[in-house]
Image 1: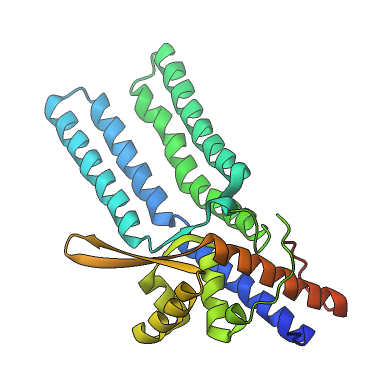
Image 2 (image 1 turned 60 degrees about the vertical axis):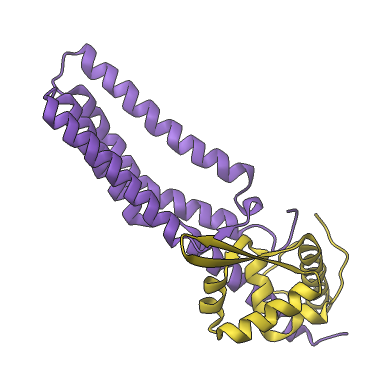
Length: 156
Length: 106
């Protein structure tokens, strides 16, 4: 069966639009990064107070909060984007983002401690939290662009 | 992966083209996601999915999360193959006419 080229192009455009819909549905929302950052900051600050009940509350809030955030994300998930759309490059980007934040946090933490700065871990986690809030959505935008640049059909 | 161009009439039907395009971008999709995305009724979507399942293009799974049932759908390897062939066929038609707006390789 041969169809007019315009119809073929329209069909390809529909395929691209539907893939975009799937990709957009799958991206981690911005509120996730803010929520994780706030929880992390609260937890680290709580630990550094070295006050027993504050540590207990901070740990409880962090554990329950993180669990709730992850649960909300999982419950919202109604589609799993094809792994090959993310690909090795996408996975390396995610790992690189996480590694960079960990390196900054640990590096600054030890540096502040060595300099005898009060609350070194809390201060060190501030740029990490900022990195999550600002970098998370950027990471998602990058992954979106990457996924949409893939061929419409390909290896599974 | 390059596929042999093969126009697939089953996929090309308007609603199924959208449905298979959604599925082709996923490892699995929830029934409600497909229904809402395509703005279809449950019965109309079920009918289209049954057609795809009978052709061996889709796999439908039902699972229970607590008391709620959750139906998920995925494109089978045969479905992916057919989709890739169809994309290649469409691209070939466009390329022959010199109409290509957005190049995309299979």
